[in-house]
Image (cartoon, rainbow, N blue to C red; front, side, top):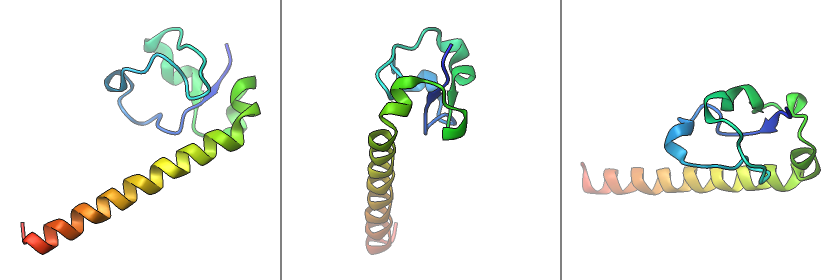
Length: 83
């Protein structure tokens, strides 16, 4: 079985309710999800993931940037409201 790229491997997979890997391949068995995924590109063997490496990496970086911006906005609001 191929090893897929998953930048959020440390996130509770069951809570995400995703049935697909980031490359679009269907997840075969959720209890073995961590065995068939990697955050390190050197370990990835999935041809779809490797073919779309640039797009997957850009998507991951865009999501991370948005999370940081949202956290900054929340921190500014809390500071302003003195919560």
